[in-house]
Structures are given as C-alpha cells and as structure tokens.
Image 1 (cartoon, rainbow, N blue to C red):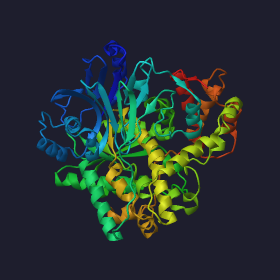
Image 2: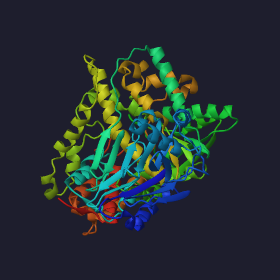
Image 3: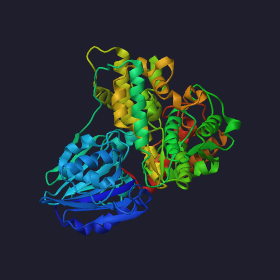
Image 4: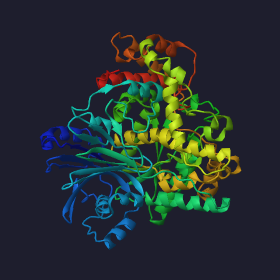
Length: 612
C-alpha cells in the first residue's frame, strides 16, 4: 500500500508549488516508508508518491509514466489488484508491453488501452490518479467497496488530492475550517461520516465506486458500479457452494505477496475462516501461518457476559490457533497505553474517531508490523452476510433510521444553546438516512423482509462499513502495515445482495449461510460460536482514565471543545448515571467521554475555525 498526492492548476505554472507538494508527500511517510517519487515535469500537474513495497519491491516505482501512441500517461496509485495475472494476459493480447511484474503497470496499461471501461475488470482495492499529458486531464477513481481512501479539495487556483486528510491539509489553499455541515457531522454522525464528506469545509472524499475527471472545464464525477437486484435462482445447497467458492477465491487471491503475510485472529467466525483458508494454502506450500490476536490485561477479571458479547475471545483464540497449528502472537494491552494512544489514533484519522476501538487497533497493528508487512482481516462479513443484531431483530430491522445511531437528540443536547438553535439534528440525520435507502435497487413484488434487507445492506455498506474501513486503513497504515479485507470482495457483496434473508439466516444463526458454506474449515466450537464484537477492555480503570482527561480539559476556560459543547452537559456525562450509546454497542459511556477528548485535541491540533 502507498500514499499519493497531487496538485493541478491551469492559471499558472504549478511547478512553483513543488515545495508544497513535498510537504504533502512527507505527511504520507507512514503510508509508504520504503520509496518515494515525484512527478514535476508538467506545467499544470505535479504528483508525488510514497511506497510500501509489497509486490515486486525492486520495480514498480511511482509515479510511473508510459508513452503510447501520441499520448503520455503518468499514474500515482495506492492499492492492490488481485486479478493482475488475468488482466496482464488480456492486455498483452491488446498490445501492452510490460517491463515489471507490479500491478501499477497493469492498471496504467488498462486505462491506456480500455479507457474508463478498465474499472469494470478490476478486482481489488485502489485509489489512483492518472494524468494525460497532452489532453491535460486528470482521471481519478476509488474501488467499489471504499477500502482505499482518496480525499480532494477544489481551490481558487485548481485541484488538490491526497490519500489522507493530513496530507491535504498541508496545502495552504485548504482552510482548517468547519461550517454548519462539518459541525453536524462531528456531533450528529461521527465517527461515521456522510459519504463524500471530509468534515473540513472544503475537503471532500471520492465516494466508493466513484470516478472523477478534472480538466480546464472543472471537476466532473460519476458512479461506475452499484449493487444490482436480480432474482436468486439457486437453492440453499447451491448458494452455500457459491459462497464457498467466492470466499476461498477472495482469500487465496489476497495472500499473494512478496513480503511476509499473516492474519488477524479473534477466535470469531470471520477471522477464523480467513485464517483457516490461509493456513491450508500455506501448508500446501510448506509454510506456517502467523496469526495475530488481541487481549487486555485483567480482562478475564472484569469481563461480564452481555447480550452483545456473550463470551470472551481468549479461550477461542487459543483453541483456533491450536487447530491451525499457526505461529500465534497475542498482543496484551494495558489501560495507560490504551488511553495514551487516543491522540495518536486521532492523528491517524485526522479526525476524532472510535476512541479506544481505534487506539487499541493502532497499538495492535504496531505489534503486528514487527512480524509481517501484510495481514488479512475479517471486516465486512457482518455487513454483507447480515450478522449484526439490527439485521436479525425484526423490530430493529424495520425501524426507521440508522440502527447504530438512535441517539440524535442525546447527541444534540451537547451543543451549546447558540449552536443548537441553528442545527436541526433530526432533519440532518433523517435526510441522510432516507437518501441512502432510496438508492437500494429492488425487485418488483419482493417480500418486505428481503426488500428491507437490501436497504439495510446498503445502509451498512455506505455508512457503518465505511467507518470500519476508515479505521482499519488509518490505524494500520500508521505503522506501515497493509491490511487486506477478503470479505470486501465486490463479487461477494453483489452475490449476497440477492440472496434471500431466509438463506442468510440459515438454521436461525447469524451468518448461518456463511457457517454452512465454510463448515469444514472450522472446529465445532468456533463454527457455532455466537457472534462477539471487536474486543474492548472491561477494566473500570479505563473509564477513570478518560474521565480524568476530560475533566482536565473542561477545567480550562479556553478549551476549544467548550466553544462547541456545553460544559454542563460534559459534567453530567462524567458524573451522571445515563448510559446512552453514542455509536451502537461499540461506543458506550467511556468511549463517548474519550470521543470528546479526541475532539478537543483535534480542534486544537488543527487550529480549526468554525465558519457559520
């Protein structure tokens, strides 16, 4: 994986901004510590790249330029194509001449020979920009599922883009400001974000499955893929076989690497399936799989079973590692380092995020990087196979609104009285929700359960899943670790979009279809283990630690946070008994407190100005 950035402008010689570009490139160091490159020979476009070498480390340097016909093309690219071999054969038959074995060259030749249609053939995760020298046109695209990020801003003099907000904010024409929309995102939506919104006033993000073109006429964008509704004609046995093929194929494709590869292993269904497929593949090659697991000091002492987390991961991790005969690595975190990583986690996102859910992953990825450069993770199975409670509980499923964010009035109550008067929280959230479900393609006459499941799947893919993918990308790349997400293969998403709910809920289990499809990959205790969410600390010391941090902040009259949020409400949060979830069960009271700690530091660190 890598980091990319660039500046385009037609009013002057943009090469004058080379120093700014180098500042943007330097902000991407963690995303690509192995190599760096700059394209600065064109009058109206300069681009930079930082590389984390995974495939063909000796070659594949970027920016990469190819001359073909009477045009010259230069690319900067972040991502991985998993069907490179097939694409290479097709492109060679069309006249492509390859000098490397890297997928960067395959992607660039695909655009040269096929134009925008090339996106139809890509299986992978990507965000890239291609400059056509004579046409003076920049073409950008982001993968179908939104795994790899691509932010941009239009300025008075042109266009700026980068892999993350930190890089984009190095450009002086990108103001550190939020307006009413940004404020609404911070208080009403986050850690999720409205698709395409970068929170800062002029910062946008290319949406998943979106392409864009910037030239002298300005910026134009369009979607190139969406989930399509088709009748499902396979029976349950055929459906399970189809799912098995797709999952096996996605995992094995994503094991390809010229650097060490391992897997996340929580002892839950999703990571165990990926680890098991990987382990069998490695065994055929005479290799041993490395698995990586997370635990918290004293969690065995403080863990209490709940509806959402009925079992602790610890015993299942050991059981699965033994079954796989993997080289097992367990990271054990303690409260001081968990709380201490809240600010680095905010810096990684360049936004406040999921509190310790972020910071624990950041620390976990730091440890994983000591052993491998690439790791496979189980994200996105719940969104696609319907594993969350809001899929399975009919009352929750049929309720209006985002199921993980039913606390709009609670959230708005934290705003100062002045700001609360100009923000209509209910209208803002409801409009976003209704727009998303309106985009869900359906079949005429289908039953209410399947119709609603389509809406729920799109809500999850565009909102909840995007937040988890943001988190995984930023926290992993902070330590220069590439994390791949096989369940995010767009073929799996498209197929499951049309599978009836009764199949997905096979035998009355969450992700019952996935369990049936992959049943011989897992021991019985893992196969039928009830879903358990991402592991969090249960130690009350964490609540005390973040409470101290927030109390210290609100004791300062000039704290940036107090310009947006009422001090009295924060005091109530700290000392009161209310237990309202900020963002589903992942963010309860301790995480809400930690979110405000991150928000205050974000406002201060980026010197954010409110422009209403």
